[in-house]
Length: 260
Length: 361
Image 1: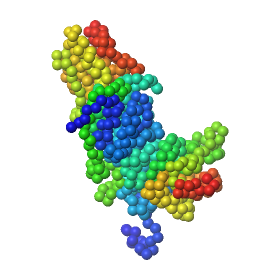
Image 2: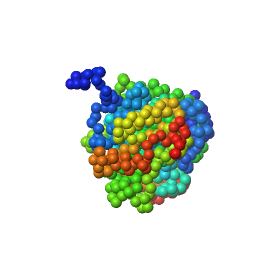
Image 3: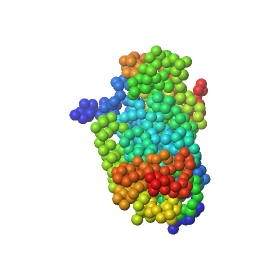
Image 4: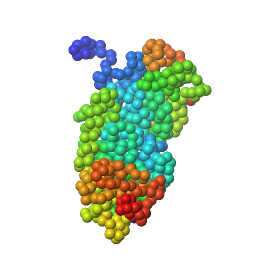
């Protein structure tokens, strides 16, 4: 049965972008990855850029992103995606190159590659999914795990004295001259999804205009890692993650937004 | 016709890369090979051919930039020296697993650890036995002159694309730093993007066009049975290298009763030892492996029946000797001699070792 048999053309308000494959997502129900994938691919579709787009997904829950995003993709080693993206973009300057990285990947093992790609101002787009935990390996403490947050390697809560501080890497890279657009978004409500998609679209357009590096953080959930139901995970995120990682644009057109 | 120049081995690599139409070079400074990056930067290859040259923030970044460019079917080169090559190993394993073509030159220095900055051949095991994690091999070329440093760039890319496999040029601080006459080939044009898409459309991630399925570069297989199949495929490729692309050179081996096996710098030194030994009446020849993987197993096995003993001469505590023993299946006595830790043996020292260990052994 075709979708046209169920929904009349004039009543169709939403359909899956053909830039997402039909492969069933490997993510836990309630996880933000699927929504983030979809809005990135919708942006690529709207820009009519499938033939120009090359994505890079390094190690993490999203290591299999290449199974879901219907564009040419490269799977990278843990933390190294910005270097891989540099190698592609420098030799194919007219392509659209993006990385899709988690917090452990981008802000711990790959901090060097992240900061230097941002500082050089590579004409790439970095999508950073921050859920404050290592999801794929089973919920260990991440560089972005907030004060007091329980994980499998901080079972009594993150102790800032023993374990160090959570890293606000997005604020850090916004200070670098090579970044042109830096934004922090979320995908937990329809309104947030619309804002996040707008930011991602801008991040891809900035790359096309060769203005500098564009960076979008998406504060997301990990209900299985956080040991909460999907609904409760989103509530916990709003109450605990957003105060520490406030949403909104941090740098626009190469200029820091006031308060940053 | 080519152009004659007096150059360092490191400079020859850089110039040959520009002339061979290489698309990109990524590297990080380390002695004794920093001249490669310095020479490239001073030559402005972006003006000469459009070649991209970038100094990375670390070896980890450099090898992953190589991975990125190689994923798109372009010709990409990197060079480093021993401690830097150790840092490359993660990336090299991914490159080998994802079957990407690239050329990596190691201008070896003494180790382990930070070691010395003087020449060494102690990275043989790392180069020919895998180096990083997993069952994989590099195609390893061992230049013995500045001329070969230049020539092996083009040859390296030919092989890298033939097999979709990383190629390592395993030299050392002596060949990297010494100056010799070198004949440089004429400038070749870089492949156009259209040519690259035509050559590598089956696998390279250049953007999914309507005329093909999308391409994915990965070394990940969550299904072990699929991963085993992939390993079978890789092993088949390595066997094909052994069957089709072994390279070696023989010197005074026809009537030899004794054989020295040496590669790179040690082969240059051993050549002098052979003439000294011949003057003393010893019937000794030289086999110089040019490919260390695939190792010249058959040529050695063919020579074995006429030999009384073999001396492996390496600037290491004895690494290639294991491959020689395997090649002759221990039917001939094999001894090792070599200075190491950055020390270089003289032809006379090799002769004296030959007399003691082989003639007197």
